Amino acid sequence: MRLAGKVALVSGAARGMGAEEAKMFALEGARVVLGDVLDDTGEQIAAEIRNRGGNATYVHLDVRRDSEWGEAVKVAEKEFGKLNILVNNAGIAGYSRGDADSLEDFDRFHEINSRGTYLGIRAAIPAMRRAGGGSIVNISSISGLIGQQHIHAGYNASKGAVRIMTKSIALQYAADSIRVNSVHPGPIQTDMTKEVWSDPERRRRTEQVTPLGRYGQPSDVASAVLFLASDEAAFITGAELVVDGGFTAQ
Ligand code: NAD
Image (cartoon, rainbow, N blue to C red; front, side, top):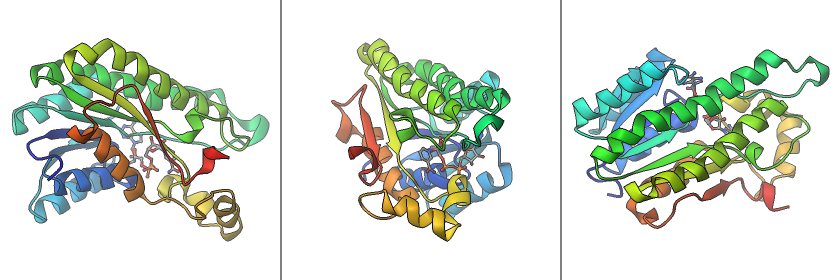
């Protein structure tokens, strides 16, 4: 098993890619702490993992709250003995609607997507030092790499911030054997993008501009995150892994 003996914390793990990552990690032998603000569904995912013989526990974790990050890391160390892996997956997105794009939304994207990621990193580093090292995977987006006419610019900016903070933190903690990488999904079929993929015409347009000709599935991204989280990526830090069906290759 690729994560045997590891303890992981995944934010935004109640649904979508985060839930898939938590499940895949558990199947690969990790003990997993799932954090989210959707407590009922988060508890359900953790129970599903346990029912299949895995080790998982759910904690309420609003990534905007420093104290809740502290609590989540404490749960990992108390229940499972240590923390080796953090996936900063929780995030929110928004489309551009022209002049109606609000400053409130801009601030929310930054508060959750980029500041929330930074709080997670700050909470995890001391525990990873105690564990002798670790792997942090920050979920950015292709929106952190390219401009997009139909996306709220604040979302692009928040994901660009995740990309570049990943590289600074990677440099700052390499001596502690803590690796830090970013993952950049393209269009993935989750609740976040339902507005587009549930509309046949908009779905077709997205598929048309994606070289592999389809939406990505949460498992496509979870596989990449699993690789970076595992010791298979032992010499990889400060890197960005694009999972977009070729979208940004054009
Ligand atoms: P999703 O909406 O299905 O899941 C996001 C999860 O984050 C939800 O469970 C939600 O409750 C949680 N969350 C939101 N705000 C939170 C907060 N303040 N504290 C804790 N949890 C919070 O979305 P998804 O598609 O699975 O997205 C996962 C990540 O991937 C996000 O960071 C997103 O920006 C990124 N991403 C998504 C796509 C895509 O096409 N779906 C593409 C690129 C990047």
